[in-house]
Amino acid sequence: MRASGRNVLVMGATGRLGVAIARALTTRGDRVHLTARSEERLLDLSAELAKCGEKPQTIPVDLSKPNAPECLVDELRGRNLAVDDVVLACGPFPRTPFGTLVRSDLENALTVHAVAPLLIVQLLASDLTNAQGAVVALTDAGVTRPFPNHVAYLTAKGAVQSGLRALAEELAPDVRVNMVALGIVSDPEADSDPLRTHRLATRSRLGRFGTPEEVTHVVLSLLDSTWATGEIWGIGR
Image 1 (cartoon, one colour):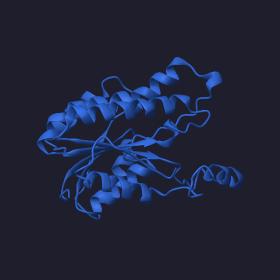
Image 2 (cartoon, rainbow, N blue to C red):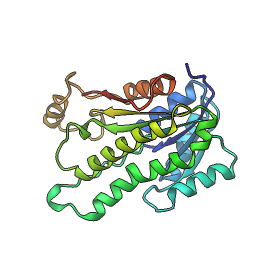
Image 3 (spheres, helix red, strand yellow):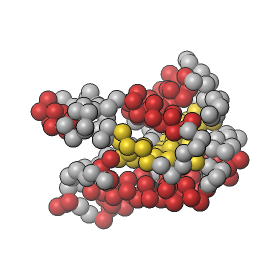
Image 4 (tube, rainbow, N blue to C red):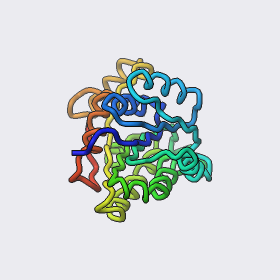
């Protein structure tokens, strides 16, 4: 069982799932470092989490920029921030119908969802090794059960799944690398069309959407599962 009080880098911390994961980690006594694009949203989240634990450090970074991985890790080093574990919750979900797909759609999605996260893990590999750490990434059930109008996103999620499984081999036995392949998670602001909501929910064997709290439970379980690596846990399919 993994001990609490770890230093966890949460990427994509201001998305719905990133927020839920950061809250759960802070509540159980881990120290979280938060990164996402919006500095304002990061500061708001840090102030909220400070009420139930140690105030998180925030590092705004745009993963679409070529030097984003180096800038993020340089900032961590400059602040003497340790990283024991990493949660990859990068969440952009661009709609890219195949009929209008262009090169930049694929390049942008691959950069944010696959290239930048893999390079960040590479740059932090020595820290993770010294801490006998773990990487947990959110991917998508759509990689193996595709849906329309999101070919760039699904291509990128497929790429990061393959890349992280390769890293599980490269970094074993010192670092564990696992993934959570998500079905559809509820979004009260977006799921306002009852017919569409019902149609999408029927894609799941359980007949409903998941919740951020249910996703968080699985993420924490994989952080704690010290005899699991290279796994893709599917939930909500």
